Length: 334
Image 1 (cartoon, rainbow, N blue to C red):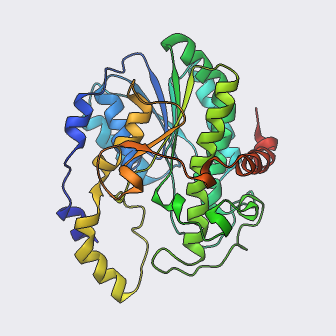
Image 2: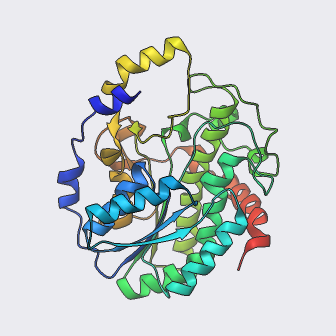
């Protein structure tokens, strides 16, 4: 897989960033900045004069990543805050630290994610993928809303960006929609550890979380519009990006070799894959209620609006997501 990363070259990012305006005076809270799209987004914020608040769990990787960013951008404003998305208590503490440091923020980028990991429960009892990719981000959104409203008042708008994926269109459920069991305290009992190419329990759980990211955005957009908020709810998908998200996966001899051959034709770099996320975070033209990424959930290309599917905007799905997510995070709300 290393060979795929070396063969795929950045094609669009550098020209794209030339069109993104200065971000001086704006605070961007970003989850998962150790590598991949979140790392690119944090670097882009620093490059354009903004302040990047980096939410990562404590690890040697996050420490080295921060050191590398500071080395590349000596004048950059990077503020690391410890946040383990597999622990609501840790997220709660991170929120308290953010509130102690800032009275307003311009953007919350819900970027961090894990993919096709084993069927295990977090310390809180939820599926590790669902808590990391959605539930902990739901808690961040709810409790940082006052700071985002203050940011919107100061700057004319503010942003909440969820990071979905092409996987949102591949749920193995009736009507390809969300299923409530994945949002409850059922970690470790949600389909086992089978991994096949885009199939098996590990991927079924992952696809649910990525659909949750887009459904969350459409629900947020509706609620913010109803309250006449200036906060924009936006989502993105990175296409088929070499972000390291699948570094732990073994698809078997046949598919591993197929990917070696087809990978370079189907993939784009994490820089190109981050364009949808960065557009949502920083581009004045990015609209609330829109998901940006390669066209038609494609694997590569510039960030363009992807029209929503029925299962993404289904009122019943939004209602279920809000009910279960609110129940999950309620004991940890500030």
